[in-house]
Image (tube, rainbow, N blue to C red; front, side, top):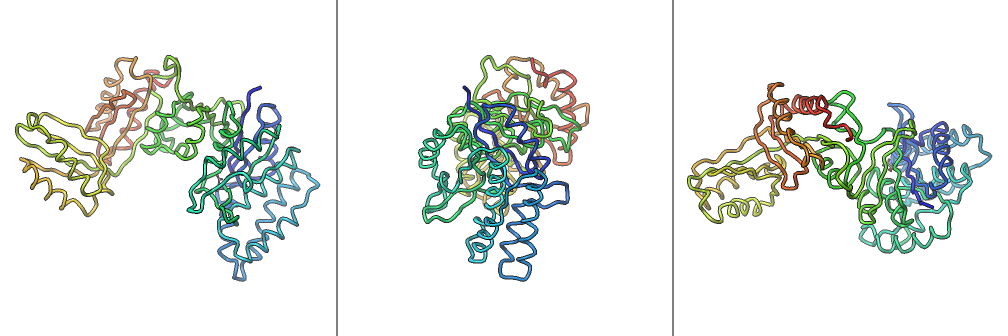
Length: 443
Ligand code: ASP
């Protein structure tokens, strides 16, 4: 029987009604054996996530505000218990947490109690055992995550359970104190549990039906991505798409476990499936578009550069010396442009220019700012002609001037550089042009 690990984000567990949806999802499929909950998130836009309430409460531990803030947290959980009609009480837990906070058990400890209590309720409600993450997720003395020890202990533990709830976001240090992952870290716990369970699928339940093919703040109602490979995902997230955090993908990627992003509020939607590789590269021609502002390009021109051996190395050495990593290096016969982030060269422009002059004495040196990069990503692009034609026609028709073009050696992406002021217009134009030609449709 296949094993699924399911992680539910804060919005999926924001109140009793959301808990009911979560229970229905879990109960609908006996393969959904290991459940990783977040702390209750926002119920409405102006609401506060329980994790933030816990941080605030801990910050106020020695002030008069503490009791009021602590009561508000209790109310959130009690509201869920009541709404579900459960005959359970967390009073003893609250008392313990309150006392530990007063004894300064740590900010991470305080924050972790959101997931802990959320997990306790879910375990009771679903009538499946609770495994405290502090017993199975380990950090090292230096605060780094100990993946080997965790995998060893957790995989043994999970073998003993048919079903279990393991709260997300935290684990334990060698000195027995609680440590959390970075914000949003329940995704990481979910991936760790999926790996340890040797799961066939890691379902990550959230409040959207997958990843969009373009930023919905720029493109109205973009299509959802059906299937995406880890490599494509990396390209898109590197270029600013808000997808899963790299750390949260790593444990399942090494184990080649697919991730399915699903929507708790629309459980019939298929969501986005993230896979290691796809046979025959099935899917859409173009998977997604993402972009970022804040780049600049430094162009160096020198007559007869094409025949001078070692020219590129010398230029790049200057960047290396100043600790600047480059993004792209489009080149012409007698010129090379080095595209870098504005932030990485800030304050170093003059020194870089001086070094380049002293090493290669160029005919021209130009620093162009306000560059935005847009990456068109798609494993299907190799087998389809006319992509570039549609891309550049779309941009031309929208009146966008293309300042740079670079096609990744993998043919997985095409990168265009435009002025920052044209950024949104360019993304829209590319999306519309591809959409009109069915490039996002699954073939
Ligand atoms: N509750 C934590 C946060 O708000 C972790 C998570 O939800 O993934 O960051």
